[in-house]
Each structure stands twice: as C-alpha cells, then as structure tokens.
Image (cartoon, rainbow, N blue to C red; front, side, top):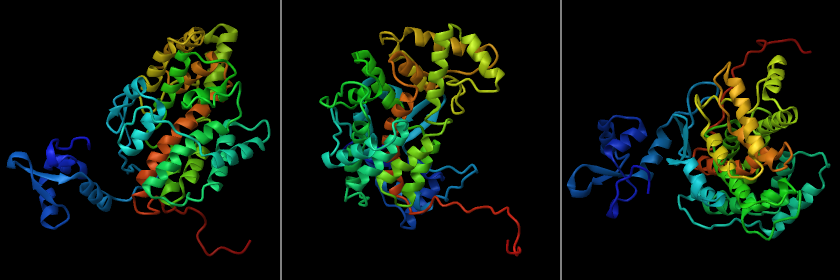
Length: 413
C-alpha cells in the first residue's frame, strides 16, 4: 500500500485531500480545482467524510506538472526511493538500517523495485550471459581493478541479451535479477568458489578473500550490501539516471553508474580508508598516521559526510555487525582510535567507508574489496532509479550549457 494511503476495503492505494496537497505541493483548495478541471478524479471516503484520490493518478499529475531539474542549482529531482533526514535514511519510508538487520540483499533489492517483499528470493545469472561476462573479464590484464571487471562484465552481458532494449518494467526487472549475480559470478575467485551456494553474499565473499567465511562475517557482508543499495542522488546515481533519461538499457545504465563510482571521492574512498587502517595497525598508533595525513594536506579517510552532521547511520549499523565478527577487534579498535584522535580538533564521525575498511582489513581482503561491495550493492539502487526515470519524459535531464568562451565571430585558427 502507498505510504500514507487510506486503508480498508476498496480504498487501498487512495490518498486523502491533505496527502494529495502535500504530494503536489499545493493548497487543499487547489486539489479541488484540479478535480473541477478534470485533472483528478475523486470519490467519497469511508463513512462519506471527505474525498479520496487514486495515488497513481496523483503521481502522474505530479510528473506532468513538475519543473525540469537544473544542474548546479537548488532544484531537485523528485524520487520516491531514498530519504535522508536527521542522521537517518529510509528506503521508501522504511528505516534502511532496520531492513539490513532483518532481510537479505536480494529481498530488499526486489522489494525496492516492486514494492513486494518476497522472503528467500534468489537471483540467478543466465548461463549464456554469465559465460559471455566471464570470457570478457578473463581477457583483462591482471592488474585490472574491480570496477574495470564489473564494467566489462556488464557490457559483455548486454551483448548476450537480445531483450536488453525492451524497457518495459517486467523485462527490466528480469534483467536486473540476472545482471547482479552475473556481475558477482563473473569476478575471478580469490579462493574456493562458493557458486553452489544460492545466496549472493557467500559467492561475493569468495571473490574478495581466500579465507573461509564464518556466519558472523557473512552477516556483516550481507548487511553492508543492504546498507549501500542507495543513498539518494549520489554522483553515480545521477549518472545512471541521465543514462536512463536517454533511454539507455539497464546494462548501459549500470555501466554509467560504475564509471562515476570509480573516483576516489565516491566508491574508491573505502580503499583509502583500508590502507590507512592497515598503516595504523602496522605502526600501532592512530595519532602518527592521522598526523601524517594532516601534515601532507590530505583528508583523513573514512571520516565525515556532508549529508550527516552526526554519525553516518550506515557506519553505525555496520560497526554493530562487525562487533560479533571473530578477528575484527583490532581493526575496529583502530578505526575508533582514528575517529577519537581526529575528534580532538574537529567534530568528524566515522562514515561507511571506514566501516567497510574494517570489514576488508579484518577479513584479509584487498584494499579494493570495499569498492567491489559498494558497486555490487549500488547496482540495485541504479536499477530502481532507472525504473523511475523510464516513467518520466525522455531526455528531461538535459541541461543547457552556459557558454563563457570567446564571442563570435572569431578568426579561423
């Protein structure tokens, strides 16, 4: 049922006048003006009191009437996926950290796409698609990074899918349920493959480290995947939406997201935190490492987030899971020492990159492991945003450049 909708009987999925006014950003009197002009239909609410409105009809009117977004200004792109508010964040109105406590990644991803929670759902890679992705990834140089491999896997998988240009919701959902496991299963194994396990987290674990996982570690990885599914309009998500606005197929949308994710200020930030934590453990002092970063004019990795004045709720939730992971104690203590040392001078809290670094360092994973977890997790969010954008007017995310070069006419060079 739509959040805030009127419950009961035939009124499921219907909104009150107040809720419609809030959703459209107008006064209640304007809602009735829409009804009189035929732009909305209404019916009497339960007991004959007030009117109710179809939520889908209201959303369609909102899409028709909203202003075009601008880039570099304050105008926002409407989305019903993630809300960040008061040091908390929510997927479709539900606390994301609570979802990570109770549900597997596939369950949350599928619910985010469809609105229906199906317990125990598993994603399976189509055989031909996975074979194409593995061949392409295997052909890359040995020094290729994880995002290189994921991007190549997505492109190769698209060539094996003749239905990739079908952007109907049902086909896009089928593509998404096959693409995510394809990305994971196409990665070269770091240890014995866990392909026989139908859960995504154990298979991803086997691509990140040669160590055998314990259940607490798998639960921490599962939680990280859920916590990282979406985070409003981050740079990679905006790139994915722009691609979807141009009606690129889901594989290309994911490839666009991966391209933006690879920067050190986004998906690769956890690798910097990993290297810092490793140095703290080797030198036995967070103070010396923090001092070196500051003396060199570098930010201390894994601290602060512009959307959270307080603690990053993703870091808080993942740290709580890592408490029960055998062997994570030293890395957890090092992370807390880094945070406490820096807090003597500036109030910066640990962000999710530092929590990912604790997971990767304590599990014998390479520095790039956090970036891989981030990319796989966020693929579900990019698909959710693509589904939203496919329902909008094509090419609406096309800003106009503000030319500031020499005025014509200029002589030929």
